[in-house]
Length: 164
Image (cartoon, rainbow, N blue to C red; front, side, top):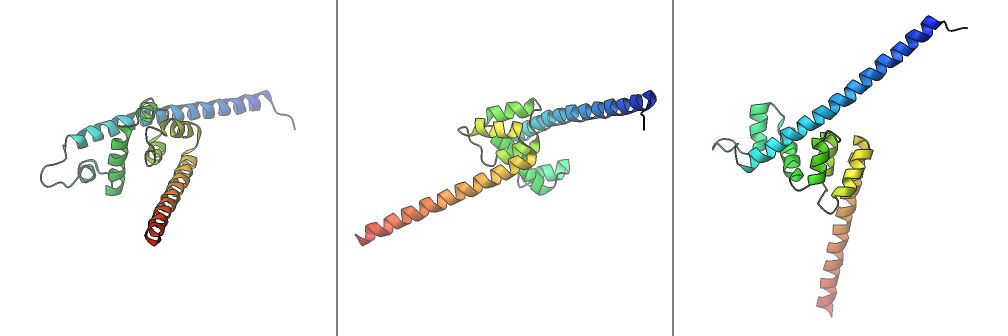
């Protein structure tokens, strides 16, 4: 079965339109990421200033829930993430440029510190949100195991000291 020139042109046009849609979606996602960074920056400053404290509101997360219509759990995560970004300048800059999403930033700020920032940022830039989430879960589990082992070793050494 031969493809006519008109069919080929329609197929190419369909591909070009679809590609243009994909480009628009990813461009808009970058703008949303940058706007979300700005939103988080404002939240961090507002929380730092105690702007939510009117004597009736319990926390910045409660205020976001009330004034911005964000569920309380989501608001609490936004405040936590916003405050964590204050000590992570490279991750902050990448989000401000629209390079990484809130989903990724929310996850990596659970475990990031200045010493691990470069490594985690690389993972966030190159991995999917699901990959980043999984990596953070494994990292947290490894740290918990490490801490449990350290506590067990310290307790064992204390017990050994008492026996000797």
